[in-house]
Length: 149
Image 1 (cartoon, rainbow, N blue to C red):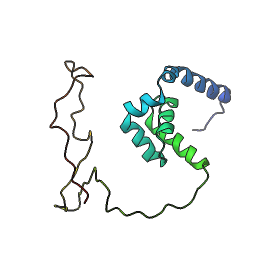
Image 2: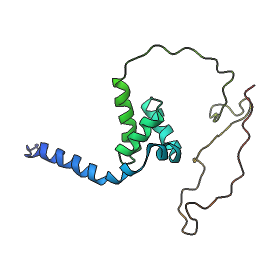
Image 3: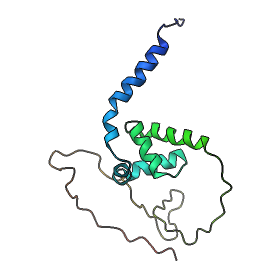
Image 4: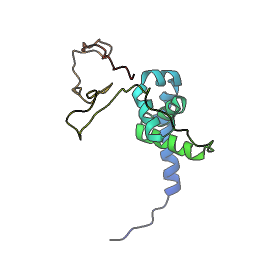
């Protein structure tokens, strides 16, 4: 089996870009602020994957990719690679850190116990016709995170 040269490659790529831009055009109506406040965990994930902390750029990447979080992380990584290095990070003390999530799969008991923090890992991922998106779902309330001191 061999490959055959295909004509029109550049035109096909150009058309693909235009179709994609047209397809995600309605996303331009969503503001950066709405994305930052409404899609908090999406912005956090993009900033983590892209290794660049900028909520504004994360929101812009979400909009520019039509909500494709993996592609949005690539946007942040690509942008980060063009930024000038401004120095080395100082070592900081972790003694006063507030732990939001601490999970141990290696030890049976860890000092202070496990803290799951905000997560959708344990949520049943099913849509129910009788629950509206804005309906308040009863939970056990907000957890009390331990004081780091």
